Image (cartoon, rainbow, N blue to C red; front, side):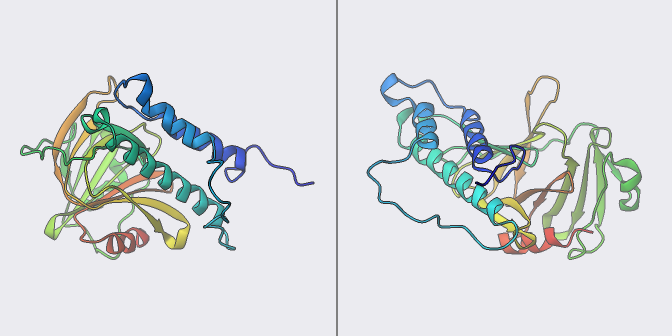
Length: 262
């Protein structure tokens, strides 16, 4: 008989716990009892459809990291269910839905495009520094994508908790402490976030393919502070550090840049 390590992130019990935790992150308007969105989503997380034909698991690759990929495929499917259920109700169509917190970013998805930001604001304490100064000023190991080459300019914000690098054509890379609770927030409409594999499946990220309002969350009280209208962005976590790469044209190009971090 096989035994399961309760601390193994790939065990069925852990997968179920992660999906239930994702359901708990839903923040939807209070509906009537007959259209309780949160209850519907949690039911879909915990129960199977007795009338549905049995199907093999569509993702069980026979290589290391396969179970991690399966877990992410299920999470992506859950996110799609949340968006579909929300968009199908009057309450959902009228509200912004917090569906995912990932890589230090809180994604808020609606079925309609959010109002674009027309103003800009700096991050707290943001100041321009020489790129070579970043390792000494940041509170975490800083890396540079070799595919882009040395940045033209750089900034440090929030007492070294966030560093940003800038290249021509609006490309920027923000790196910030992976131990922090969500720091940035993004308001999103169609196109919805897309799951992206990084480093041959060793890591995962989310590609946000459209322009969207970007802001940051004050750590003390969680107040949302708008920053600016952001370009398409890839977000991911690597080496205990959160990353957001903005201004690259495609998810594939963004993934290649992310893989070149050194």
